[in-house]
Image (cartoon, rainbow, N blue to C red):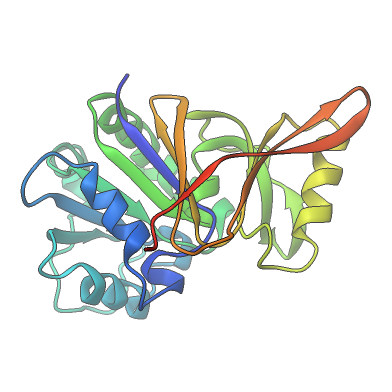
Amino acid sequence: MRGHIVALGGGGFSMESDNALLDDYVLSLVRRRRPRVCFVSTASADSPAYIARFYRAFAGRCDPVDLTLFDPPSLPRRPARTADLPAFVDTQDAFYVGGGNTAHLLAMWRTHGLDRLLRKAWRRGAVLAGISAGMLCWFQDGLTDSFGDLHRLNDGLGFLKGSACPHYDGEPGRREAFRQMIAKGAPAGYAVEDGVALHFIGRRLHQAVSSRPGAAAYRVAVRRGAVVEEAITVQCLAV
């Protein structure tokens, strides 16, 4: 298993329209000269505005396409046909999953079998990337606001072991809620600030990179009865 997962705690075109460093990093992992990159916007209920932002950010840098499951109003794009999902997924080099509601994303993917198709693509070497909900979905567990307040997800895809929390510094209460979740028995995991991405090759953490100086990521676990944060070395991509 040599596929890549790039889990963005925050950043990329969704949050940093004037800073393409994390998106460039995702593209650099694809060996094809002009990679086929699919934006999966399920978590935002296939927001047309979000899809348009993806095309503005990636046009001219790859062969962009989007996959919609909610059938939003038409846009000048080349969406995939749900009936042809296996063939479509098999032709893509990278999948970039947007933010939004993680619980809705998981339910829709499982209904259409997209979860199984993405696992197959990952195993053949595709790049899976995503921000916020698009980060959290790959793990076994994590902290989500899909149900209103912050709650434990406990229903992730499990491509990556453990739990995760995006926006660790960017949204009030997340740090405290994630630490409490770990203290109550959730599996140890990763806490990632905005502007940081964790790059996994297979299930192994290869490195952490950031689009801004000073952004951090942590391993969070219970040690000797107390929750501890172990800082992960982060390579800043900004010059």
